[in-house]
Length: 492
Image 1 (spheres, rainbow, N blue to C red):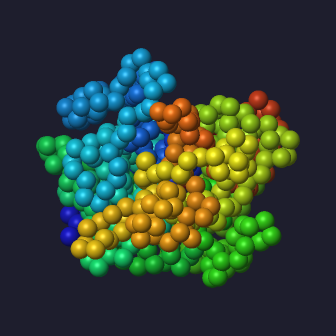
Image 2: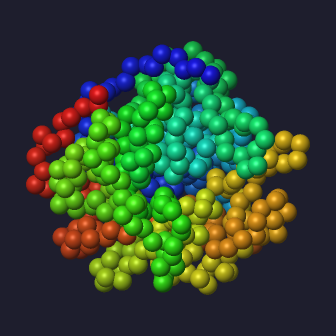
Image 3: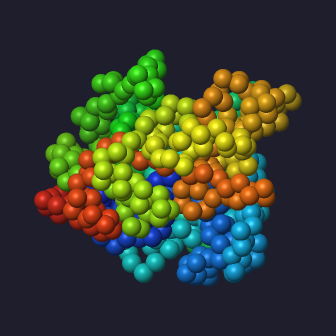
């Protein structure tokens, strides 16, 4: 499928010096992204599982009326009304279970995609409300079946940047071009054991009814860990991003696996070495702007990044611990207390994520990082964002997850060895932001916390702000001593 002529891009605005990381499931909510954007930097909302986030906010009564306010501006009122009717509970849930949302599939019905499109719109519209600052959305390449609908929804709200990591995002540039023109967009889906291509398709006209004006095409930043991958993406127009975030192995969330044979240290964590460090000189020669991420959370590290030719830095942990992040208040208080005491431990877990990628996990009692909590949790997979599509006999597509019950996973053709140590990140990450499911038997899903291992900046900022800090205070601290002129470059 060829792409239509690319719509105009707003490529001449000054580049941000600070990109706020798009973390977890709603750890980077619209409130945080808006606060950063108001400071003149790039605020980023997390697009991962955004449909369930917005659906659960509505079921909790839409505190503050923010979702409903945004829905009033959705360009297709009929769709907004259907979503509101299905999910809004003005008085809240009253302790009952959340209503499920449609699960991701390779070939969804247009009606199944409405919530995802609306949710992407709502989160970005709220982040951009009342100002002209920059707002982006962060997505995981591994969650392929949600990408097109989420991106389209954010584009309807005028998103400025799309960032994607946890994979090789070769198809995003063309997808953005097509969706900006309301053309049919498609993505290849990795189907285990596939004997033929499997493609997920989004037809904007089938969802909206058509008649909408063309959209502004956002900038696309590929999150990569290696200069080889950066060069590969830049070789052709159809895969070339507008810039890169170069993410090192100390960053929070999912990390790229170490290059070569996996070696674990005495504590069971992957060992990274010099081969895992990107060659910044080679990346600079590509000629696209880039930002450094992973242990980039101090003013000195910002200045060092600029000195190495970067446009700036992407920072997660400082903003994850800020007042505007989506963390449950009790979790944030526990994290800050441990940070102050010097006892906050963040591990690179090679097994926790069903994706198979290493995943940063903060060790906190009462969360899924606690062995007793992990052992007590019934294995189940009812959200399915990290399910792996596989081809059944006859060519039909099935879905399995290494975090589901072992016997079910094996019955679907999976290897029992793949299930060892796997955690249900979907349920745990929603619990991290106070949107945990309550089962009919009363069981409440536990949380899991991911942060970067570079905690120096957070510890220093906490020393200056013992009661915690705001996103604006984090931005001001990062920019300390850096002339604003260093951030006035533009995209080519």
